Length: 603
Image 1 (tube, rainbow, N blue to C red):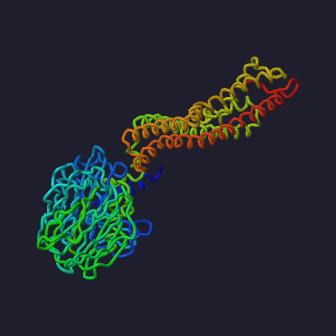
Image 2 (tube, rainbow, N blue to C red):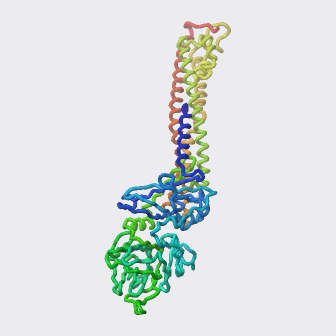
Image 3 (cartoon, rainbow, N blue to C red):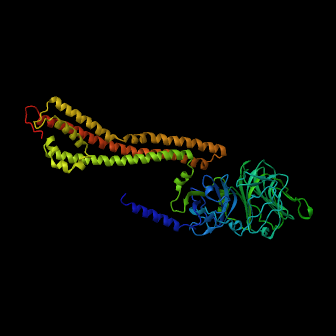
C-alpha cells in the first residue's frame, strides 16, 4: 500500500483523540451506559429530577476479570466525561459475575436518552463508593437489606436511621440482591428520630418492593401509630391499601385489584395536603383519603408493634403480620413526583428498559466494541482453529502474490518474444542466431513460449548434418511437435504449481471454521447448563465467539476463491498462447524446411 503512512497517521490521531477524551489515564477500560426514557425505553415523558438508578452488572454486559475482585476500581462519570457521579455498590461477586450498583443521576432526560460512563481497570484505585452521596437530602431512610442474616438493616442515607431489630429471615433471591423475609410472627422495628417525624398534612413518600406468599386479611407492611392517629400500608387479600387515621377516624385508599401471588411488585405511597396517592409498579391506581397526621413514633415493618390507641384503648383497625418478602424500603420527607416513582419501578425491576449497556472500550483508543466482546469469549479450541486458518490464509496470500508476479513476468516475456519472432518471419534458425535474442536473454528466460521455441529449434539444429541444408519431412515435423508439446506440458505444470494450496483453502477453510463453531457452541451450552443461567446475555457472547471460527474460515476461503479464478484465467490465457504458437511454429517449419523446397542452410 503506497499510502500506508496516511492510514498509520489516521489511526494514531484517532488513538490520541480517544486518550485525550479519557476521564483519567489510570483507568484502562470504560463502558457507555445509556439512560433511555424515550418510547423505545422507559417511555417517561415528564421530568424525573434527581434519581438513584440501579445498574445491574453481569457477565453478559461486564468483564469482571478486567476489574478488581471487589469492584473497588469502579467509577461512574457524567456524559461530559469529566464529572464523577456519586454511587455505591450494594453487592459485588466477581466469581459469579453479578453486581448491583446504585448511581446518582442529577438530571435524567425526559423522553430522550443520556449517556454516562462506567470506568474500571485500575489496580491501585481505592474504594469509591459513597452511599450517602447517592441519595439526595430528602431521602430519610433507605434499606437495601444487604446485611448479613440476624443483623438489623443499616440506613444508606446520611441520617443513619438504622433498624432496631433484624428481619426474621433473609431472602437471597429478592428483586435486588438480598431482601427481608417475614413469616407473620414478628416485625422489623425502626426507632423514632427527628428526620423520620411526620407533620400534620405534610409531605411524605414511602416505597418498597413486595412479594406476597399467600393472601391475608389486613397484612401489615408499614404501621405507625400515635394515640388515635395512625398510618398503615398493607395488603388485604393481596389488594394494596393505605389507611390514614386521624382522631380515630380511619380512611382507606385501596387499589382496584389484587397483586399476583409470588411476584415482586413495586408499591409507593405519596402523601401531601390533598391526601394520599397509591402507586403499583410505577402507575397511580388510587387517590384520596385524608392528609397525614403528625407522627413521631417507632415504625413497624412487616407487622404491628402495638394495637392500642390513646390511653390504652383498642385501635380502630388492627393488622396481622405479613407473610412474604420486602426489598428496597425507602422513606422521603417530600412528595416525590409520579415520573420518579415510575423511574424507580422500571430501573429497579428485572426488565431494565431504562438502562442500556454499550460496548467496552480500552484506553488505547482502539475500542473493543462488539468485536471486542466476541474476542473476549473465544474458547481455546476456537483459537486453535482460528490459528490454523490464519496459517492457511498467510500461505494462500503468499501463493497468490508470487503466482501473480510470475504470471505477469511470463506474459510480458512471451509478448516480447512473439514480437521478435514475427520480425524475423518465423525462421527458427535465423531467430536463434539473431543478436536481438542474445541481447534479451534475461527477459526471454522468463518466457514459456521461448523455452518451447528453444526446444523445437534445438531439435531442428540437431537434424542438420555439418553444413548441409535442413530438410524436414512429415515424420520429423511430428517429432518436433511432440517435443514442443512435452515442453508445453511442463510449462503448464509450472503455471499450476502451488495452486492446490488455494483449492485446499477454498474448500477446506469453511469446513474447518464450521468445526470450530460447532465445538464452541457445544462448550457454550455446557457452561450455561453448569451455571444454570439461561438469559440471552449469557448465551449470546459465547455463540458469537463460536461463530468467529466460521467467519475466519470464510475470510480465508473468499479471497482465495477470487484469487484462484483470476490466476486460473491468466494461466489459461498463457496456455492458449502456447498452444497457438506450437501450431504456428510447426506450420512455419513445414513450409520453410519442406523436402525439395527452398531450404535454409544449417549454419
